[in-house]
Image 1 (cartoon, rainbow, N blue to C red):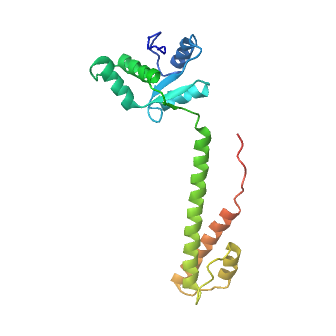
Image 2: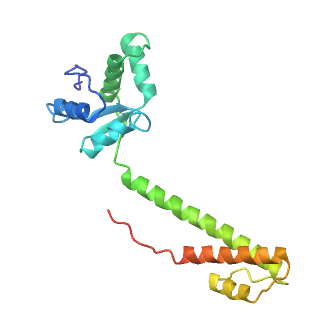
Amino acid sequence: MAGDETIVGGGRFDTGRDGYMAMRKYAKQWPNRVWAIEGCQGIGRHIANRLLADGEQVVDVPPKLSARARVFATGQGRKTDATDAHSIALVGTRMAGLRAVVNEEQLALLRILVDRRRSLGDDHTRMVSQLHQLLLELIPGGAKKSLSAAQAKALLATIRPRDAVGKARRRVAAELIADLERIYRAPRKPTRN
């Protein structure tokens, strides 16, 4: 659709590789094109990401806006592929301020790393707390709160419980120390693109 809302072309393309390539080839006749895709955070994400990866400009058309445009353009809200495409193109042409879709790979990468770091931090806090509780139960008077894994290991080596509960506490404490040591010596490799 041109800026004056004149329909300049159209077609049906399947979602497979061949359909996508045919659509891209067809669209090359408009060198200054912007793709208006409905729901780029949902059902439209797949095609939007493919277009972005190929260097195309994409704007996200919220489904509510395209539904309103469909009602205004047709006088009713019935959905067909043709009316959907037309209403999405109308919104893409008429509406200023639509969100430009960007490659969010870097954001996704950072989110994955932050989630992993948070998870390790939560695990660390939980393990240290559990270890401290076990040491309180194994050692009269307990142990200081801020022990390194090496200090906790040395302290645990001095404890020889005789009852089954004490032995279980010592075994679990040793496992927690081993888990903490594993976290502490995990290699920190920088990520490369």
